[in-house]
Length: 329
Ligand code: NAD
Ligand code: LMR
Image 1 (cartoon, rainbow, N blue to C red):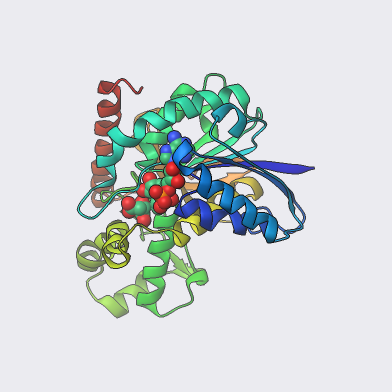
Image 2: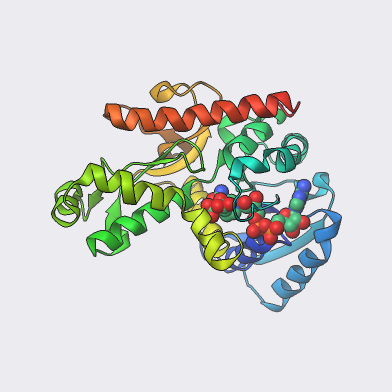
């Protein structure tokens, strides 16, 4: 048995960071063979073919087959896991939503090609920005594929939030848990520390001892730092995040396939949980159980948190209206 994985935009930066880690077993483990399908547009085919040559030269024991194509029917043929990365990145001074007009048109045809060609239980992870609304477009175009099979990556935001909290508390990052992201993968996102734990104990007391006024620190320091980290990376390195984005993509898909033992974050199609309008692709605290993402329900949400979540959800509604007006939905 082997798993067929399609990576769109495989000739781009994140694609290049993903391919070799997948071939090395970092996604599905050391026992699962992989078949890679690299889907590009004609301008990116050379870069993808070059990556395919390097994959061959890596002599990865788990890598059964690599195919490069600019035809979506070939690219998604028999695909079990689809990583939709191919899309333009933003530049300095842009918000991710500014990419809607440029990138939205990619995801309808890809959703349709997935429905027509992928394996029936395909799992789709949208990385290309604006990821939530692109996932919404892809899901809406994939007749016959359950919308629960379409997700948007917000794990990078969660990883950033956990890392910032760990740095503040001077603890190892893997001891920090339950820091979910709510809403959009954008500057309005809400990284939520209210349920955070450190080594199994509530983080709140430790946080207060270090930062003093926790609500003020969240408003002025933590939330903006996490929500604007993508822009910070662009400013410092000159182009958007690559290796951390690839790593978070692997975290997301690995947890989806293998399950979680605690909460994490993913953009999933809302069924109306926490008042989020049905059908929006919204980030929630989730667990992966029996291969399905399930929203963690029944959490206490303060008025302050609810306002933040509602602001991000309002932006998702605006994006949905904008792509509807563009004829993409
Ligand atoms: P890049 O420009 O290096 O690569 C994008 C690749 O996509 C290019 O090779 C291009 O030819 C290809 N492409 C464009 N349209 C395509 C299509 N229709 N089908 C297949 N391939 C196509 O960009 P990158 O740095 O790899 O970033 C890719 C996307 O990921 C951007 O939209 C970026 O904003 C986004 N991103 C999202 C997250 C997240 O957390 N969700 C994190 C980082 C980056
Ligand atoms: C990120 O969060 O790093 C990506 O979405 C890229 C960006 O435009 O910020």
